[in-house]
Image (cartoon, rainbow, N blue to C red):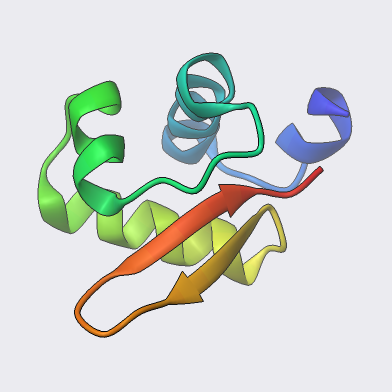
Length: 74
């Protein structure tokens, strides 16, 4: 699946997505804050990557009152 997926994303997104696969895979929902800790990137970069990967169908988003949660697509 990773080869198919990496064809859809650019270099920075690829590294970010692979970091998510290594650290946050497992069917759990995760927040922007957790992503920033894992990927060691700024809030703005995390938000941009999460939005782009969601638009490309690689992440699912669940909106809550004040935050969003994300999950990797199986």
